[in-house]
Amino acid sequence: MTTASRTPRAARRALAVVAAGTLAAASLLVASPASAACPSSGCDGSDPISTGCSADARNATSQPAYIMKGATTLAVVELRYSASCGTNWGRINNRVTPNSVKVSAYRESPYKSTPWYGGTGAQYYGDQLYGDNSVICAVGEVVYGGVTYTSSPLCA
Image (cartoon, rainbow, N blue to C red; front, top):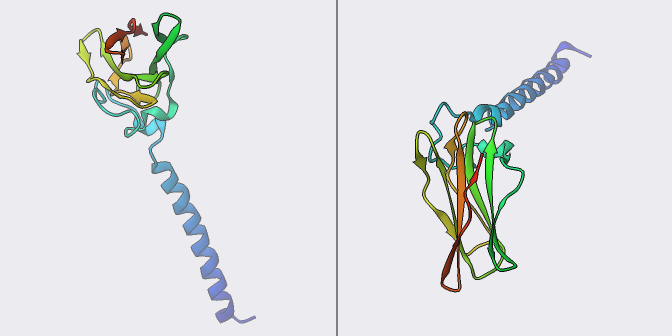
């Protein structure tokens, strides 16, 4: 085999190694929990999905809050938490249609609240608030048959 015939193979091999390395490096740039961390209150009022904070989300409390009408569960409210971002937000799951549901969150100190988010669909979540070393609460509301039902604050 001559040098000329080995050069294209060597070039292809080198190109493959460079391409694999570039692909691996690019995968590290995708929003991950570590790269989504929010400085202090930098994520207040932002979307937990678009910031990447929802990637490691879990419920912040052991039990959700239930919005009930008698023995019927109208909706379930959860307080979500991202350890990588230090943020919390509310999520509401509609259990009976045609309910209109909405959810909001607030931080006790320094006080800050998010707008209400919701509609008549199955699930909604709200904006996040920075919560490390703070108490954050989520509250949900349901309008069913013209009557408004509100959950107890779900705090952590």
